[in-house]
Structure formats: structure tokens, C-alpha cells
Length: 115
Length: 110
Image (tube, rainbow over the protein chains, first blue to last red):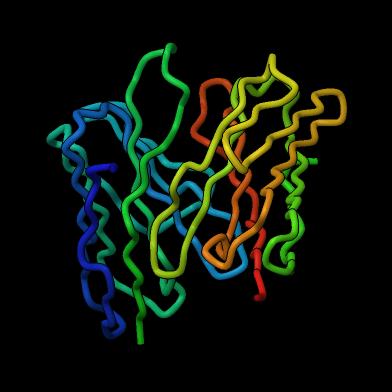
């Protein structure tokens, strides 16, 4: 059983509000990721981190920002939420090292609705 | 192509075999994966195959890999109603995170 947790699971919020989606993992994984998933669409990588103080933007441009101050924590922030940000956000982690299979361990997701 | 391609829907009867197909993008991808997503949940790894293998079997699951055609398939034998979910194909390209397809929704009727 993977030990990666996301909060909140569901969030409904008004336009213009600042929101932070939390993601924590207790596996000591160096690599962490945020994917955005819309219904019937593939997962799009929006941010990733290969270690503390390392963050990169993914393939899909996003107005969100992330930080990685601690290994276990990778929060995602939207400064001013808009209806176009309505989506499911999935956090994942994986161990570093070429010997690993590259498997990602996913949280259960945060479903964000912006009114 | 640039995208990992999957058919979007598959409907089968309980007890039949299900075959979900995927075309990936990069012949140099080292690992290929099948993930399962149940309603309201995150993705969970079902199985993976290393690129130097042609086939991998794990209980009711059989993965076939055709590197020449960049084609991956997942066969579920004796499909059960509990297998109803969305199945994602993914590839691991060198130096990148996993690239996912759009997912195939498997519907199993009794």
C-alpha cells in the first residue's frame, strides 16, 4: 500500500480565491509529481521535483506553483482560482535511482471545482 | 505520433477475456506500464514490462509488447465486474516522467 496522501479530496471554491493542495508521502521518495486529469483526457504533467529545493514545470503549462522545502511535502498553489482550473489534480512520487522501475505511486487525488 | 494512444471504451461480459490496446511513442522507452483507476481513486500500478521482454504474465493479466510497432496490450482473463475501471497505458522515456494515454474505460456486465 502506497503511503502518499492528498488533501483536500474535494474542494469547491469561488473565483479569485487562493488555494493550496497538499501532498505528502512517507516513503522517502526523492521524486514527486503533479498531474492534472480531466474526464476522458490523459494525465498531463504540470510540475515535478527531483529533490528538495528542485522544481520544474511539466509538459502542460499551468498557472499553479509548487514548492519542495521538505522531501515528504510537495504542495501546489493557485494564487487566484478560475473556473478553467476546475479539474482533478493527482500527486505522485517515485524513488530515485536507475535500478528502479520508474513506477509512480499515486495519491487519491484532489478534485477542485471553481465556481 | 506524439501521444500515447488508446481506445476509449471497451465493454465485455463477465467471464470473457478483455484486451486493451495501446500505441506508445518512443521505441527507446525502457519500461511500459498499465495502471488501473477505480472511481474516485488515484492510479494504481497493475503491471509493467521491461522493453527487452515480449510478454509478461501475472495471474489473470498478460502483457504483450511489440517493439517494432510500438504496440502494447493488456489481456485480462476471466474478466470480473470488479475489473470495471479505467486502464491507463504509460511509457517511461529517458529523463522524463511517465507519459500517459487517455485511458480505456472497461465496462463489465454480468
